[in-house]
Length: 208
Image (cartoon, rainbow, N blue to C red; front, side, top):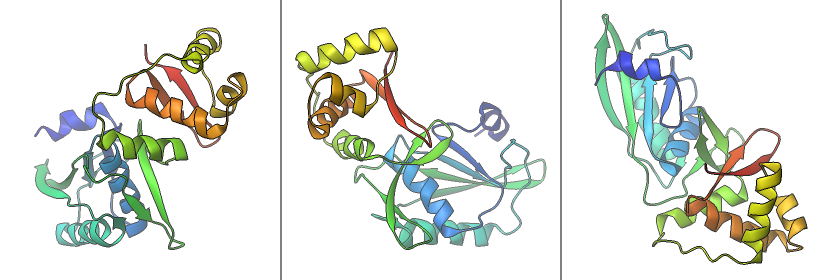
């Protein structure tokens, strides 16, 4: 594994840098976000800007991560470890597989369990729609998309506006949030539209 090459790619959907492990809750959030999406790797001993700092005590970091994976993630996650020396500094590579027992929940500082999902270089709290997508993506058997009036209106709107929220979709189709959500979930799983989650809102766009 060429760590330097990996670091040059920068943080993303399947790669996260951690200079050091400071809390079980924070690391659990990253672990479940990877397991709920495509899996990924945590590079411990690498700063956010890609500078290799190295880890001081590899045993301690490994213990913290294993504890997070087993006690702060539900269902528990099994991380794989690899130690790599770069310019005499030790980087601990933690690999997380995409899970078949999704969704995974992480325990936060207030002892509450939440689902997280990896979007670009962030581990974000999953909305109801994303939790539904995570649940269904595990048992997907070639989703067939039925093009009803709902889908037609959605694509017309996306053609004009470029993006849509659940509220807007429910409004233009005069349907309940539940019905609108179901349509969006199926289209995300089928790879037709993609979700974008920011701190403020969640919206959907077509996949070009």
